[in-house]
Image (cartoon, rainbow, N blue to C red; front, side, top):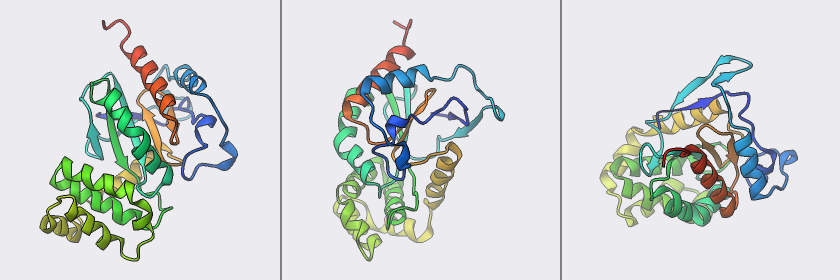
Length: 245
């Protein structure tokens, strides 16, 4: 996933998608069915890489950020921006993501990139994100194990007076090697990636979390129902693979 198109006038945030996103404007929260979301997404696809307000589209490199799932070069690519402290992001990761991963990512249909975004809205989210990055420095398995714990026990670390120490204990329990983990945090070796995730979110105009960029289509915002994600990804995959079989 080398770059994503940004600043397109036709990239709209569909009103129906704001009802379940952390930080989204309340006046834009309305209800919408899965079929309406899918139809709106496909109908609003940009036809040309030109922003009517600013000229040629800017590209935002994301290769070196976040965590990648799936097969490089899959027909559909999704960039997810979520805050570890966001309740709706937690809901997505615990309830919806495992099924999407099994049905779309692990079989090569979708390439998925998760980029943590510290919005500044949630206590201790920065500490949690830095911890996850230092686990990722060791291995993908360490990142996934600690990340799962961070999502599952979100309320505990958000309310902690020393979240860094609490999460360190979890990291050790999940098999993260303590010595390099501590060195990573002490030296701030991964902190630039955390800051870069924030810059990327601002560049893309992310207004709430979670936000999902199905590359080449308008963004989706919020912990949408599983069936909505299924319909969207199935429709986009069908459109992207037309004539290839």
